[in-house]
Length: 216
Image: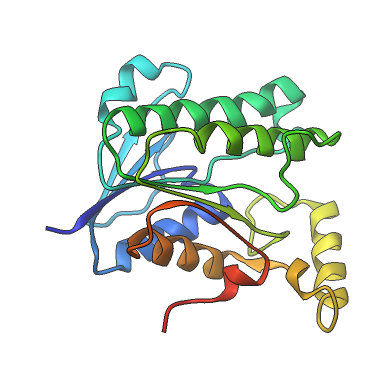
């Protein structure tokens, strides 16, 4: 029997690429995506469960499988307030991780961010660090936290500041500061999947150039 992958955040830049790679991966027989709206992707291995993240009583018992991939996230521009962003980036993801752990899901893969630190004075970095700290205490056999640099991929939502930062980062990290080079979303998704199926248990943090290394 193949593995069942659980995904939240499938409509985002990383989540879209992750789902496509999971659907093509031979070790996964089912990809179960939890989302607020349908993706429009049709595939015999894909099961989309439409939910309200604010109503965990309705979806908590459905979070069952072999690995939970957590790629949910928003921006302050979209969320409008820090409280709203915290709810999406921290609360929703933590509640899903707790449900997966309670239901016996053995592996958990979280997309965090470079610079995540619960003691940071920067709101975004502190929020990401706080989430890392609490999910690391849950009873998964395998917990993997991936900290990419600025993401490199085609967004439906245009973010002018991020686009400028991406171009600058590509130039500046060609020869120096290579660990800060932009992270292509296809590379990130591939690393998440390969890490989820390897035989290494326990807590791991993957960042910098390690994201670019793939099993031979």
